[in-house]
Length: 246
Image (cartoon, rainbow, N blue to C red):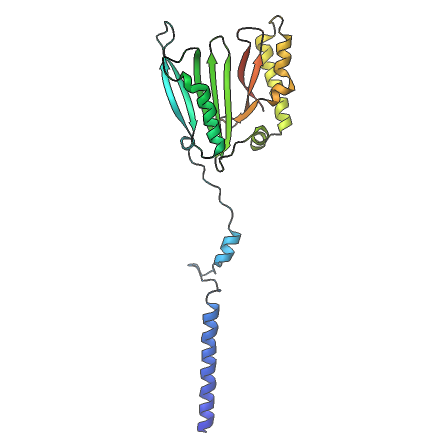
């Protein structure tokens, strides 16, 4: 009887140790219960199944600022003109090259004594999602104007071209060029239709090469626009215009 009792106790002890071993081995893989009693996912499952989170793009002031600003009074006018030059605050080669181009073109005018020959210089910047657009417009003596346009993906610092801008605006690039041609033609003819000896300049303005050389961007209202050269047999003979591409 003692032998049977001892054997019975030994069996119970073995079963108890086995149960403890199972709990220890599986405790790290079983999902713990949440406050509502449902099982939580394992760390691995959470990492692989969690939806992607959009990278925060910050504020417009995080990516562009006024690098230089001066007030200039021309002639007998009592009202000064404000000239502003931007700086793009993104890191990377694309932004560095853009800032160099801006500086090379406009820094020489940014003191009142040097602001001779330039009548206007200003910029507009917009942030649409992760896309930063910076457009710089200037006007010189004689009526000629000059423009620069830059588009960046602020999450990478990379510069974006026309096709990428059309895609981001939900537009087809070829259709965008077609719309630009239509809008530019309407704008041009409303201003220069009666100008004599202007057909060559009109053809140059509406030529495919000029339209494809335009710089597209997205403005602060989210519309696709383009900086495009226009030519006319009057004044300085060449201007930059901001024309809709949608």
